[in-house]
Length: 185
Image (tube, rainbow, N blue to C red):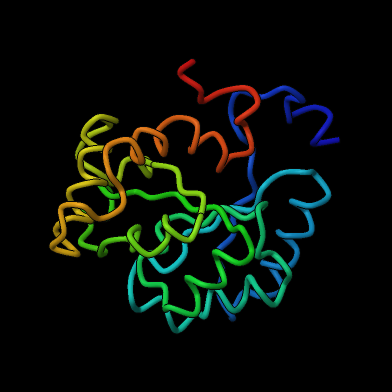
């Protein structure tokens, strides 16, 4: 009933089911994943935005319930280990990079320089009201600047063309909407 009445079959936006990936809520995470599969929508979770969330083992939980894959959108993913970066890449998990929000909250900086070259699909996100502006141009500039500051390399991924793609078609790919939105051509 929900899918028929509330989910547009030709959306210009993406309906998703959100979950808090944590060992203490694993049964809820499993139920959320099953509902997302039944409805044909993505599962969305804010993961490792802060280092203390490591105790929740969010990537392990999402792996255990079978959610690692292209129908999973992880927001932030700042404090991923090397093994988790490899798992995200290997399973084609989608990521939302929210640099303005992360900067505002002092959460840390996503490892885009490690993720992009591995082919991880990353889109840009504002993360609602947890930033000081909704200026998407500022978001793009910040995405580049923070990676350069983190790595102290001006040629590090992402470059301007990479961020423009993350803001347009790349973001649409992350949401599974690239056949309808995101292209500037």
